[in-house]
Length: 132
Length: 98
Figure 1 (tube, rainbow over the protein chains, first blue to last red):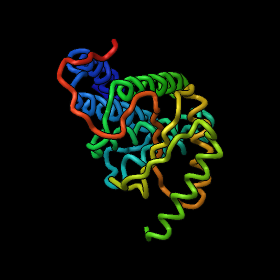
Figure 2 (figure 1 turned 120 degrees about the vertical axis):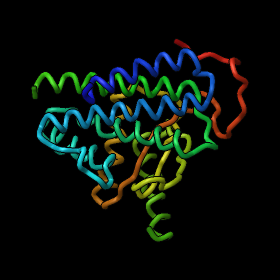
Figure 3 (figure 1 turned 180 degrees about the horizontal axis):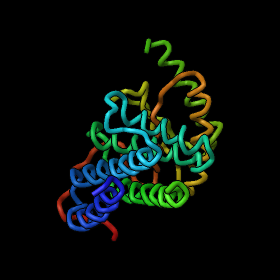
């Protein structure tokens, strides 16, 4: 299974989990984290398609992945510039879900993340038709 | 980051957010850093707006910050439900809309 398949499969399973146990905040935090990582894996997959090796990066990997997405695809007008704040927004939600336990994570946060992921997934699919 | 620089950065972010979001902006909440970023920011907006509009405005906040060399992580949250403090929720008391 490559990163793209993994990301799609993860989000399908997270939707299932949300339906089964989304009323628990711990589950909502977990789902938000996994949705973010799915988007992160989509990014890594795209970068591999142009010859980069995110798997050997060791420092500031999340920021570097976003920076490389911008350098490789946004700066070359292959991807919408709006994907950069989108990815950062998703990352901020993940950081919030993982570290900030005093902030309530509610249903709308999870649904927002599913919506954000779908926008990014569609942009990645469109891009893949161009670069592969 | 020194305290004074951090204070200046926060005010700069507040100013940029006010320009971009105007009356839509209810509050700017700072936290972190939790990972390698300089600062974490939540923009609390009074209502949801379409993603493309939201991201276009966020880009206008990010650009001047990046020019100054800051690595800030900005997220948007919406004041449609109260979420300031953590409250215990009984299991099964509410189901996610599916």
